[in-house]
Amino acid sequence: DSVDDFVPDNIDASGGSGGGSGEGADVTYNGSVKSIMQSSCVGCHSSPPVNGAPFALVNFNQVSQRASSILSVMDKQSGTANAMPPSGRLPQSTINIIEQWIANGKPEN
Image (cartoon, rainbow, N blue to C red; front, side, top):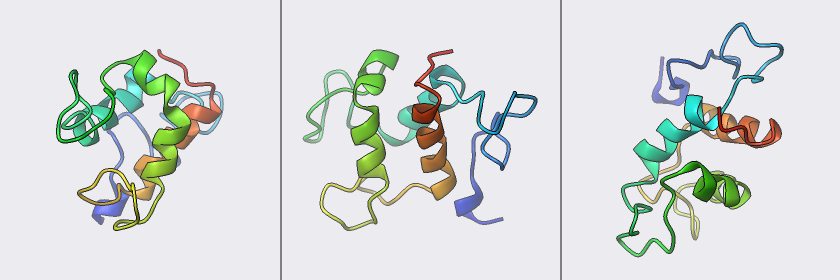
């Protein structure tokens, strides 16, 4: 396994969380996205934001309102202007979770 294979414990490798009605059907903010935000974004996008971050990403409403732009900057290659997080691109499997959450309609629970 490589670091690119990392996915949160509650998500199976196919992008779903097991037992759902379809692949990725159970990806929710509280179940998957919140932990990604906490580990990868809140270091700067806290409340109040630090290190030059222009806004907070600490709760469902903040993340949901900016979901498309979050996905856009996470999907950029490391070193590209405005790529997030600045420490390096997240594994594609993690980015796929954000993408699936948006496709599911950004459910909170």
